[in-house]
Structures are given as C-alpha cells and as structure tokens.
Length: 255
Image (cartoon, rainbow, N blue to C red; front, side, top):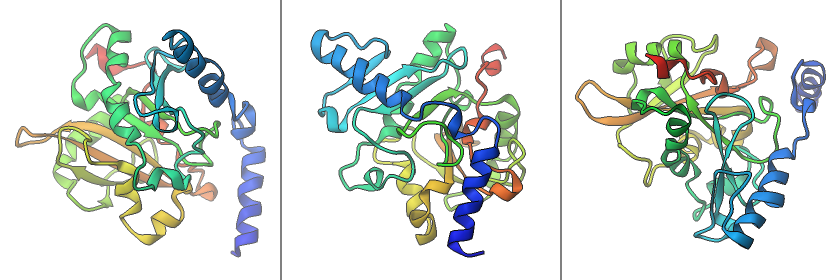
C-alpha cells in the first residue's frame, strides 16, 4: 500500500472510530496548562487547577501534574511548553527534559489520592500513539496497572532482558515487546530515547508507537522497570493506546 493510500486509511479509521480523536477538544489540556496552571503559579504560587507546577528550569523545560477527570487516582504529567506528543522531535533533543523521570517521581500523587502506599509493580506510566489519543499536547498517564497485566508481567519477568524482545503473552489483547531497565530510578534513562535508539525505523515513526513503563522488583531483589512498546495496526484494531494497560479504578490498591 502506498503512503497516500495508507494516509487515507488512517483518516477513515479515525473518522469513523467511536470515541476517536475528534470526540474532544484536542487542545483542552494545553489550554488548562498555559491558560490557568502556569499563570496562577507565576502570579501567586498557586498551581490550581493543577496539583503541581515545576518551573525550576523555566517554562520551556517545566511541567505540571494534573488530576485527570477520569479515574479515582489518575494524574497526568504535562510539559509547560508546546510539545505535540510522542512524535514531536523536541522530546529527543539533547537537552530535552526527562518527563518520564518527573512522572515517576510524581507517582506519590496517586498514593495520596488512594491514601495508601503502593508497591513498585502496581504503578505504571503510559503515553499513547498519535492515533490512540485525544489530545495534541504531550501527557504521560500516571496510574495503577491493570491486575491482569501485573500478573502477566510477574509471571514472565525472567523472559524480559536488556534488549527489546516480544513479550510472551498478549497484554490487553495486543502484542507488545519489552525491555528490562536495571536501574531503581530513571535518572539518566529516558524511555523515549530507549525506543528511538532501538532502531532507525522506530525513530522515524515514533508517532505510531505507545510506551508503558511499569516498576518492578526482580528475582534477585533489585529494583528496576519493564518498558513496553506497541505499534499501531489500525486494520487489526490496535490503536497503540498503552493507557489500556492501566486501571483507572486502581483495583491493585485493594490487594
């Protein structure tokens, strides 16, 4: 299929898919961040309606943490500068902020909302592909992982290594590949770069990918992460929405 035909197919699928990207104002998040959270923080050190605004490195490299309207404890990490999403070249710039590191550190907002501490493997971060999202401002979902996904990861941790390999079982009905990150924090590790460095094809087509990061404690007792990647296949009904691996009811908090 030629590129023009493929592009038409994508548009048709988006146009007729229920709950697709036309269902909401695609700039809604950006309007909240730029029109409310940042001005309020600058004027009176009041981040509302966001939960936090970090401008320590200036607006160009700052971010906010916002409670999502969906879910009991879902939060979003959103840059305070205009960044389109996973496809935006700015995320791979040499001096780009590590938004994933900031999002992982912000997981305590989820715990505060639930009024409980959660183990590493109960927390996940996710960013959707360009065809699997409703907003055109980069945002990382911070929330609990689905119990069935948590169980699948635990049962197959020994099969996840330091290079990208297909994950042994489907997750939320889709095929992912996985890589192990042997580091307790994301200091110096940016999942966007981990994906882009995997192969030239990934870097050239970042927008069709979704990434999900889950904290893990491995068999040797060390703490780290499993990073998951899926590629959109619209003909197969896969919009590469890694957010599907999250549970916005946070059932794992009750275990």
